[in-house]
Image 1: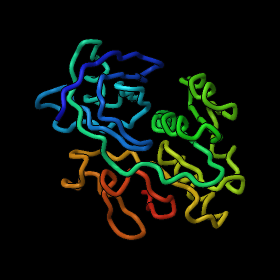
Image 2: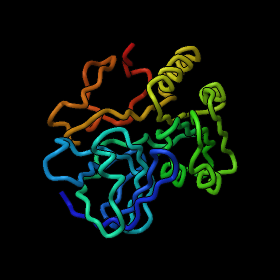
Image 3: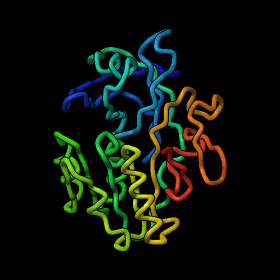
Image 4: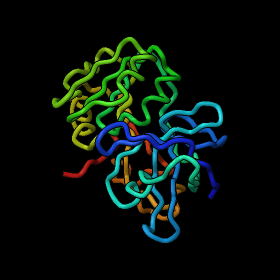
Length: 233
């Protein structure tokens, strides 16, 4: 595990933080790192998507949801953090007209994707207070924002060749239903947010049920064609 210096760790909204570290490890849109700032407890490192890369700076956007992310939120500039990565298969090769759809903290991997796809149209959904909308708008003039509703209702799948999605499971299930109704296999890709332990497919903590059997979200994903994923419930 590499050791990196934290340059900044800023709270953007209630429970939402953006951390910047110095690292030249790089990465691709849709990939993630395993972050760790403690010795023994919690047991697992935390998988955090790449939000942005600028030269030798890695940016991570995360939400405090448990002990690990709470500890991450307490770090300050000058502190050190353990990094492993980048891991995972990111988003597919871009083809045709593309939409990026994020719900809540699911917007995290889409910003770096948008930097590679400035012509993409963006859909951002928030249950309450929005954040980082202006940053997305600086990269694209086609940003649709929904607060308190269902951003998936704004997306017409027939208008795009590919749709890249990350967000809470109900949002991804809604996109799966829209995909089925449109008969659009191979068009919608979802980035899963499973709990992980190793990041390389050795531990099976992130095992995901798919139409082709159990797969590893860290090594086989985290991005999958939506029609392959079997969501719970």
